[in-house]
Image (cartoon, rainbow, N blue to C red; front, side, top):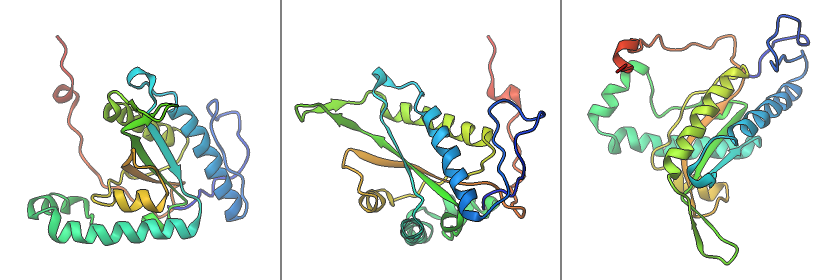
Amino acid sequence: MSPSDTAGDKDKSSPPNSVQLPDGPNHLKKYRTLEVISNVIKTVGTAPSGAHTEPWTFVVVKDPNMKHKIWEIIEEEEEINYMKRMGQRWVSDLKKLRTTWIKEYLDTAPVPILIFKQVHDFATNGKKKAHYYNEISISISCGILLAALQNAGLVTVTTTPLNCGPRLRMLLARPHNEKLLMLLPAGYPSKEVTIPNLKRKPLDQIMVIL
């Protein structure tokens, strides 16, 4: 993925609040990407949560060195996952998607977003503060995040780095009450981008009307 080459200001045919990027240097395009992602996450912050505890932290990585370290950790752990931890059946099920432990897109995507769930919080007196339904709450916010990124014209791929959470949490200096749930490398699609032609279940297999 790379920032888009879309040019020009928003024209009359553009939907309300749509984003059009001007031509310019890559650093300008990256700034625009960060600007869009900031607005996207502001929207995601309106997601519902158990007892309105808002148990989420979205870490947006713009530093190239930090991004490279994240990529190194994930590929190192993913190689072990594919070779030992996941098992032959899991690896075989992934062959149709052509996924391996090699994930260079994590190093080339303009802005990775790491989503952490807050298992609990702390009150002003230092005692633990419960985050009710934190798993469901953060999952809802991730769904809104994916939809908002797409609506803004960005692309991503869901990445769930197995066994990488503790190392990435330490690298990003996140507190112990946070656990990594998902990573979304975000940016504008390159001209060479391809996606798998996956078939979806028909409506009558996913919806029940009573």
